[in-house]
Image (cartoon, rainbow, N blue to C red; front, side, top):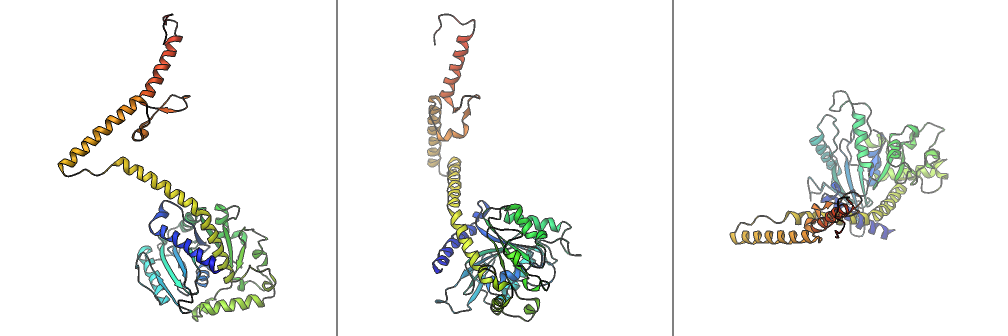
Amino acid sequence: MSALYENLRQLITVVDELRDVGLNNYIHLPRIAAIGTQSSGKSSLIESIVGKDFLPRGGGVVTRRPLELRLVHLNTQEYKPGDAWGIFDKVLPGQKFTDFNEVRAEIERQTEEVAGKNKGIVNDPIVLTVYATGAPDLTLIDLPGITRVPIKGSDQSEDIEKLTRDMTLHYVRDPRTVILAVLPANQDMSVSDALQLARQVDPQGMRTIGVVTKIDIMDQGTDASRMLLGEDVPLRLGYVGVKMRTQQDILDSKPVVKALEDEKAWFESHRVYSKLPPGLVGTPVLIDKLTKILFKHIRRFLPEIKKEINEKRRNTELRLEELGGGVPVEEPERYQVMWTLVTDYCDMFKNTIRGKYDRKLQRYMVSLPTGAGKEASGGARIRYIMNEFLTEFQAAPTAPSGFKG
């Protein structure tokens, strides 16, 4: 398993470096996007995965900018258990936040700086890297929840539902994105916004993993076993049930590590969930599943990404070559440029008359008439036109009987 994590870390590092140089503006890169309705438990789930309490809390819409969360697992042989810090790579590169209350405050500050202080939502991601001994090697994007009704007196527009849905679709539409669909157990699956959006872009459920939250607050006598077994809405990657901290646990500042211990004990002693097949409940199970899925996902798409990069680089190099260098300042150099241009023109002219291929002229090739089946220029085109003319001339009634081509 350690070899898997080491290989995954190398792959994620490559993808993150490509993302840092802006390649994601031109080529889609593999990632995991957490989606769900407002108050579905996305933020609590992500804190459970990281093992730290660091995300903003409060009523109404809390996640108002996408949070790109890069998790780096620290080896316990080199670091003490519990060692952790966060870095905001884009805004405060190199500055370590060892106090995760300060991390929360910085997320709130960056959110208000861009989205305002009045509950506005903006599609401008915050990038946070968390190094921790208890964190897995993953890259997650926490998206604002689907919001149906705007908060009165806020900066949210009347089409807030459309805005949040479009923002979610912007991330999950890409086939290289793994969808983490978060749905509360006390809600009917048939009306789940997360599953609805996931089915819209991934109808076969090939890259969607369902996470059932709030599993401990279901009505007495009911359980989520059918949901977890995928009997209602099947997904190829399946479902995982999790029990997270309650609101009272958060108010009492209950550590995430202690909450994970309580979660394990609760599932093991439950009358239904303890009898389910392994791999269906618990945050550690979810982390293990996400790690393997992301590893396979990156390994699958990396050759395609490499091919796309090489193609774009070749096209850019050709375009730069066409544009040529800058205009020289010194007079001798200007003479040299003029001489080179005249020489190139002569070569292009001769190649054109002879009908030879010239890369400089490739963009200006003249298409033959329909049915010719190929392209030509210069001498080749002249020969074609003359041959056509000769054929028509010979077929004409007035053509001299003794004429030969």
